[in-house]
Length: 190
Image 1 (cartoon, rainbow, N blue to C red):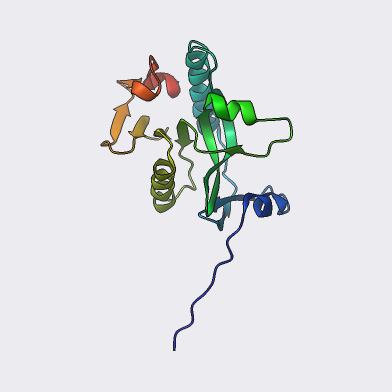
Image 2: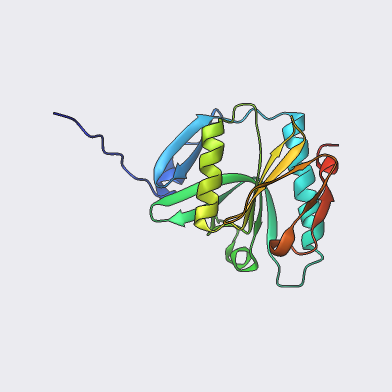
């Protein structure tokens, strides 16, 4: 006789009702609570997040209005509603429509962002990163960038396309989703 374990699915309201902890990062993945040790920030991680945020902000200012918004520092996005996936992403570009819905007391942005950028941390697990990329693309994120400051590379994932890896000697190109965006990959790691 086998026993099956039933996992109680959570909502964003349930997630944000949990007590705050400096020691644990929490997110929802298809309604399931996920927890890990809080990311150990370091200068390389913070520098890459700051630089990518700045480069995207500068590019976004050149785009016609109404335009989206760049968020950095683990901005929460509910990228799936049934069951809910609510994740903190290192750097994102929200669409203009999403930007318009954000008010002072908003705890998360609803819907998939145009771009999700994850800067790898020492405690990231390969399986969880791969799972996140798949979920982001499945939910409608146009591009996912995985920034690795150890190898000084940026890997770009787009639904229906082969992944593209850019090295520090190359220029990262935003393509149709980020028209006109380019930057030297080396600049991210300076």
